[in-house]
Image: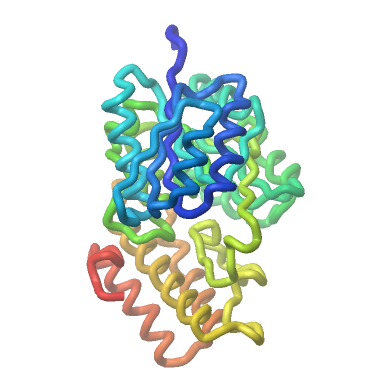
Length: 330
């Protein structure tokens, strides 16, 4: 790039100080260390403030006094980063439950420059090295091949060893060039979670070429206690096959009515957000092809009752009308 890159990490966190400390340590271990980290505390939480005070890299904590959500928190952090560090060249969105290996950031930046990408995302793995998620390819045939590879990291890497054009990704790790961020605009603050990261990355890929880098596999490792079966995140986006066992709330005995109700609502939010993104994204690619599969997953999880069928139609109709869940009574 001619000049030394200046990367600022953006983090939205809430009551997960131990995970946050783990992430900040992994950022400090990078061979290409971020200039700083800007964090939005969606709590607020005294333990989060203490973790930031002890950060091994320069860190700024923003405390809006309320939960802005993932998108709203990142938008606030991004605005502060651009104002505080006008010479920054890249922004790194990273979840508090991610762990980067020391060369990850440098490798992502090198691949980004080589492929003239405005944004770049890695593969995601668990602690055992099993593949969790790959960035969605622009190629539909490659997307289907990745699904067939399942959790086999080596098999997935062999499908595109040099990387591939990315359509969208989920949010645990995404490196963005400053000009691409400015062209696309920040993450939306009016979308309740579960798919807002997909919407943002689609805007990025429409603003500038986006790339996926298979050689980098970032660990996405929340503790089991922070990912109850009622937590339906956008990691499960667009899987036409049955959801993993941990996501089948209500299909197993012993689940509380409260957990089932929470999961039902979160799954409905995801459905609506996906439909919303299909009609509002400047380049949704093949996202609409995933709507039927997610509807089937919803009905398989909760049962194909008339009320549940109606809920699927309601969520998709509201989304296709351009209404994110935050605009209606859920």
